[in-house]
Image 1 (cartoon, helix red, strand yellow):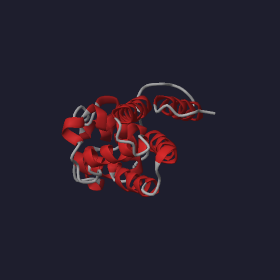
Image 2 (tube, rainbow, N blue to C red):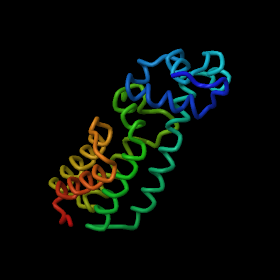
Image 3 (cartoon, helix red, strand yellow):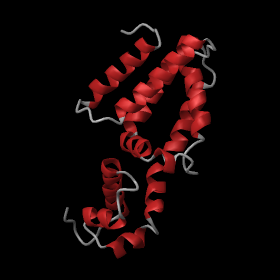
Image 4 (cartoon, rainbow, N blue to C red):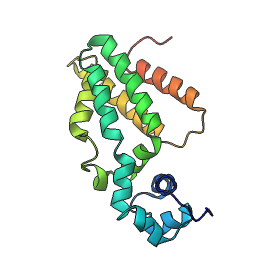
Length: 182
């Protein structure tokens, strides 16, 4: 994709997130990103010291957004917690679709990055909220199914309008949790 001589950080990030999502972090080179952004590799390196720096900037907003969701869920219990967790997780999974896809493709190499929240701890806290804070095996299994369904589907290749995908992800997760929909 040819661009003007004034390639910006945003251009490079746009190219990188698309290429990482399509080919994986490990499967994308700096030259691939530079070519797609319409700049030289030297120009790319002027903006970012390496490929990790690009990924760090792409993932940086994810941690604070999940922390904010956790804050909203902290005082909630029961069905109120489950519904808020579904709404929040659907929202974040759709907003960060490409980042989720990147993480899923190269999960072993990317899971413990410092710009991401503690993934194991976050997963546990989200499943607790999705289960309505119930410790029953049924509630815990259904919570895991709902969480993984939202994450995997949002990162998938469905070509649906976002509002349709949002509605169906929410409806499907609530059904999985045994909660009434509409």
